[in-house]
Amino acid sequence: MIRIENLTFKYRNSKKNALENIDLSIEDGDFIGIIGKSGAGKSTLTYVINGIIPHHYQGDYYGSVKIDGDDTFDKTPSELSLKIGSVLQDIDSQMVSSVVEDEILYGLENFSIPKDEVEPRLSSSLKELGISSLRYRTIDSLSGGQKQKVAIAAILALRPKMLLLDEPTSELDPKSSVQIFQLLRDLNKKHGITIIVVEQKIMLLSEFAEKLVVMSEGKIVFNGKVRDVMKHSSELERIGINCPRVVTLSNRLIDRGVDIGKVCINLDEAEAMARGLIHG
Amino acid sequence: MKGFLDYVPGNSFLHKLNPLTKLVLSLMICVACFISENHLLLVAIILLNLAIAKAAGILPRGLMLLKGLTKISLVIFLLQLLFIRGGDILITLPLNLLITERGVAMAFVIVFRLIGATMPLALMLSITQMNDLSNVLVTKLKIPYKYAFTLTTAMRFIPIFANEMSGIIEAQASRGVELDTRNIFKKIKFVLPLCVPLLITSVKKIEGSAISAEIRGFHLRTRESCYKGYPIKKSDVGVMFFSAFLVFSAIIVSGA
Image (cartoon, rainbow over all chains, first blue to last red; front, side):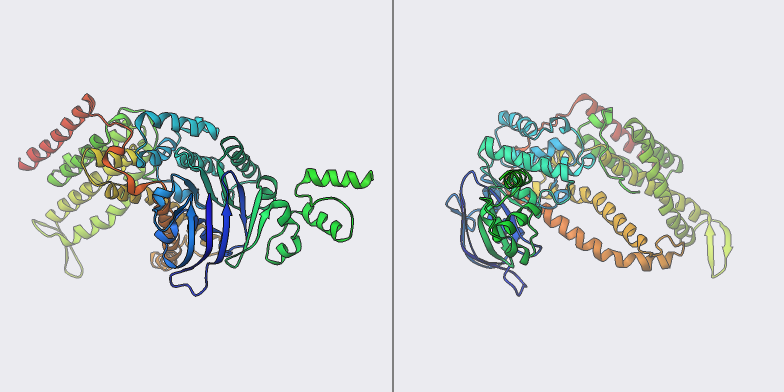
């Protein structure tokens, strides 16, 4: 469980607050998407959750962030990482080894996981992500999607309760992006891992996430279930977030008094809505 | 020499050696190069380097290294030729410059040394995984992990930065910057400003790497954390004896 209370943060040598009065609760088992245009404070929010702020980046820090009751001020990012695993935006710099197997071993060795547990954890995390065949491959020879899976597998091997991902699909093609989100959904549903994902592709979030946090200029503008947030499509567009067309369409119909029941957040719902309207 | 330090997977005898043995072999080849002033021995060491590359299945990389180093050596050769004086004067040049017998001999020695001593380390890194090297430095040589990690990360980043630089150069060339000019001064003038974007991306990548290590328990690692074992086998002992023999030969030849 993550509790962020009244958090304000300003990077050293910066004039503007990167985060301002953030209040956020993330429950165990949630699948949360964080969205906002560039510079909205999304990555900074991930840094305060995994303890990189205040331990790596310093600045003016007010408020508190607690992971399962532990204040991130009192725990190092290493200690926090057993509870909350993070996958960074730049996958290439995240890799510390030249071979897939070593990349996954890295965290396990650092945390001195008992040697008889290492192999089961290594092979199961590779299997979970469907990349067992890549075990002995060099990182350089992998595609963007495969690297992303390796990065997630390396974190999963540590068996964290929560997974924090910063734009995991930023360099992926649409098919690989969907694959990554399907994988995250499986981890969330099958293993109950809390997923917090920063993402620019709203279509993916509306399809896979349960809750949405919308950020603008360091503040949380909307926070709630995806469907509830999507009701505010015109406000979202004003702060630079283009909603999926089905959302915009259904909101316009609702504004014009057409009874369609609820906002459609994906193509299947829009199709059902259209059929309903046509057939009365 | 793009990608000259990237790990090349393989199953050769040299790939299977203990990383420590590979490190010792390459260092001993370097030592032998610096001890000896004998041209024939130095040429033999260069040939040995190529034989190592062939045995490890990376002969093209060995030849690429040789070619690259030869180009660099050309400048050094010319400088040594002009500035080392001794023995008979072979050619007298304008501006009171002389090419002497000793100058020619030493220019060849220094160039052969440079090539012979640089190749083994690069070849060793091509057939050794950085993690294995770092683990061996920690477990066998008792070097603190943070220093071993720093060393191996620095080496791992060399090809990454080289790729980054070629990306920046390609981007500039596509915008019409004449980076393919034959005029070396003009080329330097165009390339120098590109160091700024390289520096920025490098710092960003290094910072990302530091964060990544930190969130995966970097500070918690101890000497006992290493999962893999690195036993010294008979083949390792054999190669270490060979390394010692090489240095011994260099001492004998240089003393003769």
